[in-house]
Length: 254
View (cartoon, rainbow, N blue to C red):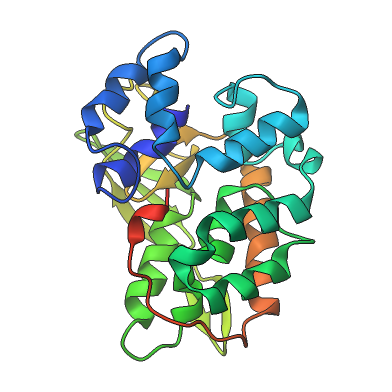
């Protein structure tokens, strides 16, 4: 499960080990071994959240499927992680990378942010603060939209390509929101995975960049929507604050 969600940004070189093939090879094993833990730790954006969730839930392995699901999609384990710990820990890890002014602003999420991927994308990335910037707006909006885990409904399957409909991010009046549903073409499932052989039109799936990561159950779909909207609300509540600079390094993500 970790591989399916972490592979799309790793394929682009945004985060994780430089040997992308190693991620896929390890992901095919029945259970994560020490070698795979080393690879997963190279995802410096995701790994600290997995550790926090596992520790709060009393689960020894940060790659336990319940922990991985909590971070990428969302589940009840997120309620066990102290929000203040989430905010201050992430500020300490990424404050220098994104600039001091932004990191101070990020502390405003300390009492409400959750250890979910959408928190990292919307509340820790400096791209949110560049929305509306004349030169960077389009690039920032595109990165935020592609990097978040978005829910989408399958509309067509042809020759290994899967078309889906999802609501893209829009930015207007200083507010970040979801726009009307739009169609996009994906590459299908992350290579090496055969679990989507029976994917059908009408199925709900999760998409990261342009790969399908998972077929979503009704409960997972609800959780992904709920946690995403929670952090969009945080972004909009603090939308007036400035950021200090364009980020110098995009590889702190995933």
